[in-house]
Length: 155
Image (cartoon, one colour):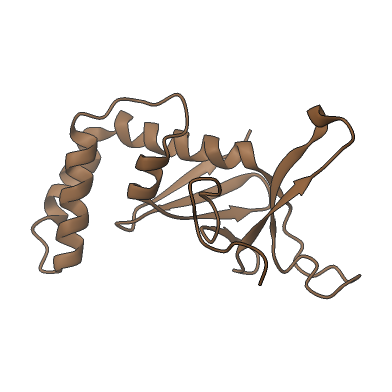
């Protein structure tokens, strides 16, 4: 396997972007051009062209920039609704499940003094995001590590 399927600082979405149509992971593709301004990084379902020459999954590709923005929007929704999330996590921190308690406590610490962000923050991303499920190019469900799902609509 030559594709990197684990997340790194240069490729934070690897293994974390999931196809809402078939459940497969998305892979990063670079659309090159002789004009550097037209070069794009996109994510596409790995089952789209699984068999050479035959179209598999019909889900659309998604631009790299949209994934970054989906994370920013998700984090800012959490900050804007801080009271709701803090209450939810405080209840979770009383859970009998040790892992749930730990995650809730970590989220509370991180969000307590959190402010909205304007650009992608890789440290926060790796601390709170489990996966992003992409549906037909207009909706992403972002799942936090503690299980909350946030729907992001793409304009």
